[in-house]
Length: 489
Image 1 (cartoon, rainbow, N blue to C red):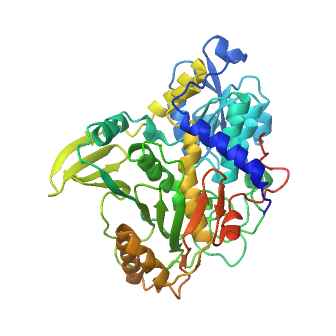
Image 2 (image 1 turned 90 degrees about the horizontal axis):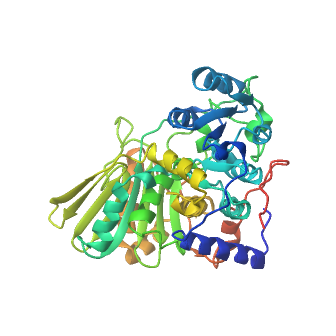
Image 3 (image 1 turned 135 degrees about the horizontal axis):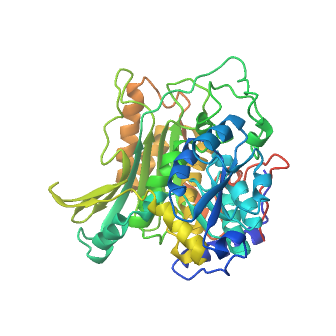
C-alpha cells in the first residue's frame, strides 16, 4: 500500500478536522458562473442509473427548476431504462468524464458502487460541479479526506446521502437529551443493524460480464479480479474490492445518527477500536462479515455496534433477539434509556415506561431539497450532511472494517478482557457467541476474527502502537490506473 508521509498527512488531517469542527461556520462560495444558476435553474447529471439513483431521479425531477440533463452508467441497459422512464431528453453517457464536460450539467448525483464515490465526486468538483454523493462517502478513509479537501479547494457544495440528518425530529431529540437533560447523563451507547440477507452464492467459474456493460469503467479504481458470486450488481456490497459490507451499507446510517444525536458531532473519530466478526455459515463468495461486533472508545461515552445479516437460527426467518431497534441506537442514561431509529424514537424511564415518543419523516426529499437550496445560495454551512460530517461518520465504519480486516483468529480470552472494562461489550459479545452457536459456528474454528485494541491518532489519521502497520495498510487502497484518487493539496 502507498503510504502518505506522516508530516503531510498530519497537516491535511488537522485541516480537515478543523473544518468539520467548524461546521457551524459560514462556508459560502462565490456564485457559480454556470449557465443554469443565472436563471435559478439547475441541470442535474446522474453518475449511475441503478436502483438508488432511480429513487433520487423521482425526487429531483419533481422539484421546480431542476432538470435532469445527463445520465451516465457503464451499464448501457440502465441508461436506456432511466432515459425511457425518467428523462428522455437527457444526454446519455457511459463514461463519467464525458458527462462532466457537458455545459448543461451544474450538479451531479453520485450513486455508484462504493469504490467509485470519492473519485467521481472529486472529478465532478474539479470540473466545477456541485455534488450529492451517496453514503458511505468513501471506500477507504484516505480518499474521504481527499474529497473533503476537494470541496474546500474548488469551492463546491457537497452533500452526503445520510438523509435522516434532514429529519426535523433530530433537533427535537438533541434538545430532549442535551438541553432538557430529561434522562440525565448519557452513560453508554449501543448501535444496532440487524437485517436478514441471503447468501450471494459461490460459483465454480468466474461470472461472465454482460456485453451491455463496459466492465473497465464499472471497475474503475477497483482491482480486476474474477468474480465468483452469482450477480454483478448490488452484491458488490459484500466484496471488499468494491463495497464496505453491511457496516458501510447500513452501519453508516445508524452510526451517523449516534454521532449526531448522542455526541452532537463533538467526537470526530474514536481513539481506540476493537472489533470481531466473520462471514460464517453461508459458504458464499462474499468476504465482508455477516456478523460484526465492535467497540469504539470515544473518550467519554463507551459505544458498541452489533451487526448481523443472519437469521436467529437455520429454521427461523427473523433476526436474533437483541436490545433496542433492529436498525438504530440506544442511549443508556442515568434516568432511563433512549431508543432512536429512522423516522421515530422513544424515551423510557428506569422502570421501562415510555415517557415520550418522537415522530419523524426519515428526511427523504428534504435532504435533496436541502442540497438544491445550498447549490443556489452557495452557502455550504446550511448543508445537513456536509462532506466533512459525512466523512467522519463514514470513518467510524471504515475503522470498524479495519478492525475486522486486521484481526487475527478469534480467542475468547482477548474478548473477555475488554468485558471487564466495558460491560456493554461483554453483553454484546455473549449475544454474538449465542447467535453464531445457533448456526453451529465455533468462532475459534470457523474463521471468526478479532482485533486487538487498536489505537487511532485522530489528528494524524494513523493507527499507532500494537499492530499499527497492518491496520494502517487499510487506510488507503491500491488504485487501478488510470482511475486513481488524487491527493488534493
